[in-house]
Image 1 (cartoon, one colour):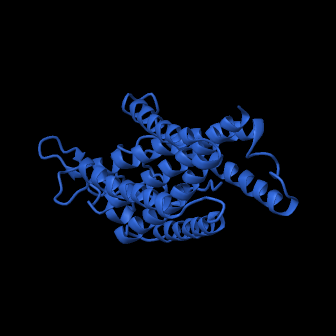
Image 2 (cartoon, rainbow, N blue to C red):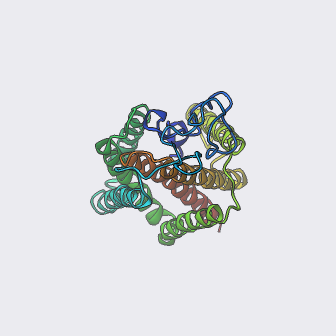
Image 3 (spheres, helix red, strand yellow):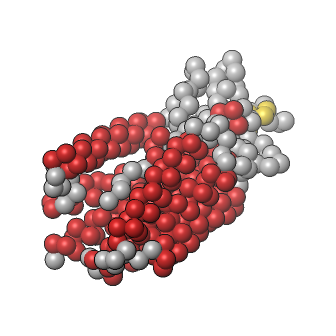
Length: 293
């Protein structure tokens, strides 16, 4: 089952548009642990290009800007992308049956859709600005893939597994959001570096396991079944939760720094990819647990 998430290779909000993301190198003398720190003595606007001097106190602040990104923009764009994923999944579930007569054809279409979605996500990741058409197209093809895979799991493993995976994904999202809002999770550069390193290591292990499975047969190194499969499923979900925290941080900083409204599409893009990651890992974990019953 596919378990790749290009979310950890995307650029984040661009510095050209006024928002310094975790992916941008800090300027000389700028605070690294606190993205709200207002630069240095020689250049008080180094950290935030949108900051302006306060009329009374002379302290830099992020002004209200026309056309700046708001939380409503992020919510509406995320609703569009996730809605497109769900619509694509529902149509694929209904129109691409996974019975014995059509299983090969449906799987072929699902794999093709997954590859197209992956390519579209990479193209968007290297774009200087978000392209809504690319993001919505990615969501549509990703939905087709998820619909076929979910239908197969429901048919051959258990009809309740898919709903459990959906509910589990929603619970992870709600839990991370609560923890982030309560500041139980503090996203710093050290946190970011740890998550990125763990994600790279996780993906390398999955690639090695896939190569062993392709050339050696069976389940490769066993990372996708049994006890190891359960362990790596839990690790995958935890990584997805960490990426959610990074996404929330990007949204919070983008709004605070007055990022352009179009950047809300980039936030929706990242949140959608992260939720897809969590859902796939949740679905695989529950499938293994159901198969052990």
